[in-house]
Amino acid sequence: MQKTYLAVLALLVFLAISLMALPSYAHGNKKHPPAASQNTTPAIENPITPPGQATDANHEATPHEHSATEAAHEEGAGAHEHGAGEEEEEGHSHWGDNGPSTPFEKFLAYLGNFHSLVVHFPIALFLTAALAQGLYLGSKKESYASIVRFSVWIAAFGALGAGLLGWAHAGPIPTHESTVMMSHRWIGTTLLLGGFATAFIMEASYRQRNAATLALLFNLSLFAMAIFVAINGFLGGALAHGGMEHLMPGNMMV
Image (cartoon, rainbow, N blue to C red; front, side, top):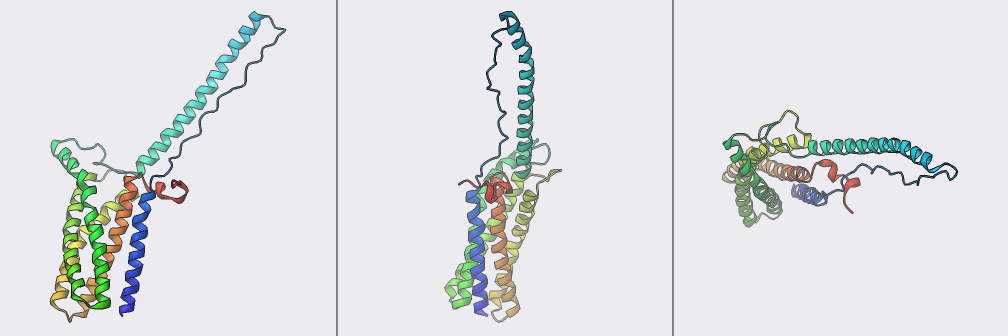
């Protein structure tokens, strides 16, 4: 039984480190449309043609070249605008479709700026609690159990603050919200509630040390919280850096 828990713990730590390390590469190279090629071929004048006729011929050719340059410029601008729209779709969705309008909404949006400050506490503490719980299961030392209880309660309150500030930061759900943003929103809300559920199950398990069902339920809940808080942190990092496409290997900065 202990070997099984240690194997789950090792898998959890590996998954958490992998997921939290990837956002550091999220500053990918943005794709830009190729620049419109300019016609550098010099105009060849016919030495036999009189100077007046040569000037008229060059003057007639100029509008054609100008039209080609304008067409290439418009094509490049359209591609640039299309790319910008795709990038915006993958990024944050702030305050519905029209943004904060009332003073209260603007105040909430201001408070939401502190989401990125608070969110690191539940991520770190739930992972720490899962690690300490794995060590407790392997050694049965009460010192590890004390670390677990302290970490879980602080992480639960941290998840509450991060979740509320996350809703203040993102605002109401817009008409068209990206999949990454919606997943981050609802996983975070689930973690907000799951943090306190895990803490209450933990207390019940410690009061009834011989209740194997409660102990198993607490272990499953804690390890699940650690996994999903790491996943949601990964999604938050993707949103902060412009979307999931910036985390793909082909777009990573060398």
